[in-house]
Length: 498
Image (cartoon, rainbow, N blue to C red; front, side, top):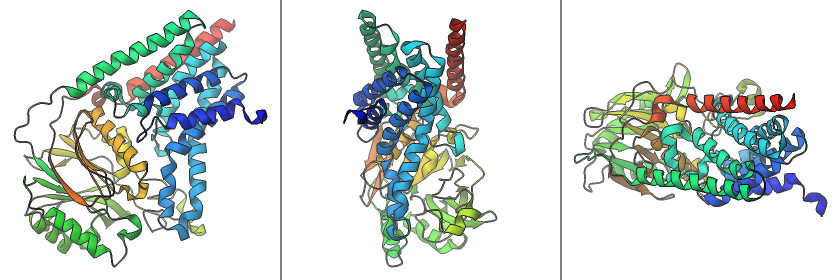
């Protein structure tokens, strides 16, 4: 029995506990405590290989639980894709854990003694989490720093973004281990707690301070048709969801909206032949502008798009999604894998969707101002919100029916909240099955429609805050800080070895 109780198995268990710090569990003390435990195990590994094994196991446990929703898309059509579900989860958890394993190996290779290793591991973990947001198109979901979503500490992201928030978290976990055992270790723990408390207080003050007055704020109406993914494209169900969305659009409840928003791929015809559909939407909206999710054929292929429908059903603007989901919206090495019948889950064509040109700010008129549109997955990436000029607000349309009903939709909502904090802008999100929400510039949800609910949400658009530090700088300052800290720590290792 004891042969199974290895540091790696303990690390795997700690990884599972770390995942409970993520949305929707949000038990951040458990997540932070488990990170302290994992840092302790890695710092006491005897070799870089043992440390890598330990850190990898922690990452595997963390991602296996926090990303368990990844199996849901494969269960939409079980006959065709169900067999892939366990392999997808295993590959995702094990692959992402390699980043953590690399951090563990570097910590023991570069650190002299457990205390130095703990500090280097903290910096290296922040570095690999940042890399995870960019390498191979990136996947910065369930970052270590995401345990603070929904807490006042989330406000740190307004200054340093989600990767700075992650560095803050890994250093907070290492600090109790850096000082010697004895009274100083208790001092380290107390200091870590004091820093957390001060930042928590500062975040709370920023979170609750009154927003700038907006007596005549524009009103948005969010349509949530609640089309389950396995029913969405069924011929007998398409008219039901279409009529439902139109009825919600025409809802006569006060206040009257300035803009109506439909979720991702909610119009059941291609934009190329959508004249009649757009005229019907415009009529239901009373001539007010509407933003809808739709697919279209273009020169590059099929696009997952957002269209602005003006009076009379005229499409005044079109935005094409540019950050596509690997294996969901496109298949890497499509010509090869297509021979084996492997296709994107969200696009039936072997080659999937074509990618749009990049972030784009749309002008919706004097009252609604400039908006940065995001389609689904794009709200996961803070770098996708850098489109040159600063918009007045953010708009996400999404189809979270792919993410199931347990954790994925709530995590996606949490990431949208974090984007609002980073930019100091309101975020409006219309989700097919929920959670549709209006989010203020400090990440507070001001109005929402619950998951699995068909309905309509009409609410005022919260005003923007002044441009945040992070919105001006992006990830470069944190990346440079991580690189400098790592260089100093490693240089100290070799200097002490002379």
